[in-house]
Image 1 (spheres, rainbow, N blue to C red):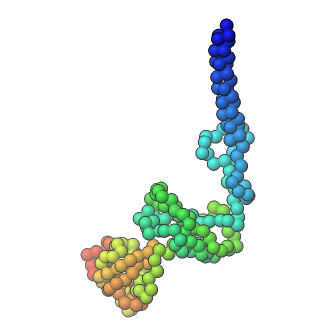
Image 2 (spheres, helix red, strand yellow):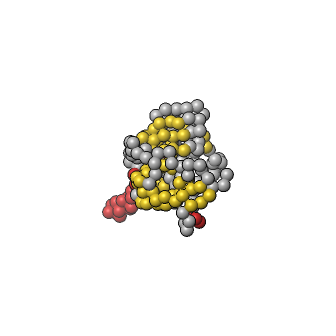
Image 3 (cartoon, rainbow, N blue to C red):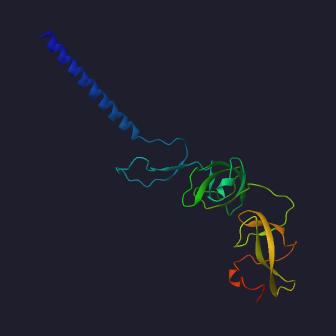
Length: 217
């Protein structure tokens, strides 16, 4: 009888341990429902309703620190290869241009773009969370080079045909221009153009079979 009672007690102890583990798990689940922000700030977005069920990973609320804003730029994946940590940047908020530097970039591209985080080194009036901005990241600076606006056609480090305006502005003639490195808006001119030459940057592919066009004003 003593041996039988001991075995029964052992079974009951294991059952108690199992139930204690279940209770601890449920208590952890209950504690996890109490969500706290990782830092102090202002709640700017809270779309959930009382008692609403959500899946794990769902954004519950957005807490903003007005004095610690950053800019997130969407960079085309073809140009993201040149972006590194620490590069200088300029953020245009429509109310002023703020200097900054790159502090992070996503390892993956989404919809053809890579998100790049820029730390702001100053503030301007009217800065708000989720404000639409434009930004320029300086990946390289070229001194004393001839450049023009980037045309709608052609690739960097190649020779392209461009229409250069005559002195009177009535005609444009085709010239072969050797271009070098490029940015988003400008391209380096290696050969074929001189300072103060005016060229047409829009798509002129429909006039590929002619070398001279007349400009109507």
